[in-house]
Length: 248
Image (tube, rainbow, N blue to C red; front, side):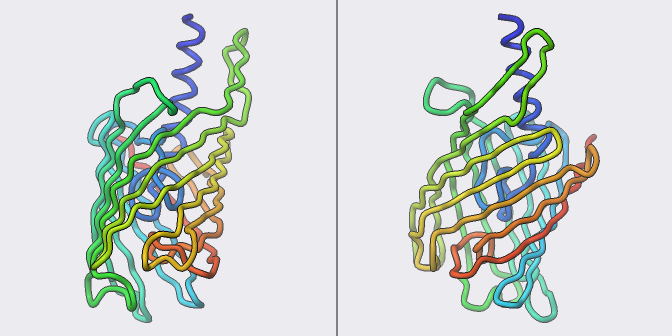
């Protein structure tokens, strides 16, 4: 029993501490959706900058998260866009990891994010965006060498949930699904969210790779059709980002 508990703690530490990177809209998780198993270590700050291409124009998303406790994470989100690369959206996020309960998932969390327009906002986009997500994450594959108390990779997680989206004049609920493969020096994510909002042109999706450069610095890159980090567009866009962790 002690070995099982020790292994479970080891897996949890690897899954939560190594790749707790802000999503494009703030809450820690994949690129476009939150994950319940990835929450920052208390008193840590994670800053992320991602550059995306969109219809031959670029925009940047800057996020900063702070772990106020073992379960609560709060953050600030910004979007910089336009020819002059001005601040276009400003908002905040919060994620609360729920206590463990028996069910379909090993971890549960509620994630909220709000973004408001600044300097005229984004052309063709809504003035405000509010999202509330209920997500569960499940440890699909764990291979442990109990004699050596070592974990064989990859660790596999699935995350699934529902996303309530409020925009100017529209309220929708979008189900989502994500798969994550965790290696010691590599994290691979694939996600999809249903097309439901009037601003969605297609189902929202992303495929990403994250690589730690050091204990506190990581890079990520991939493709996504995310518009404003929220809506599904018709065109897949390349993104590249960096995240920095400041531990206290």
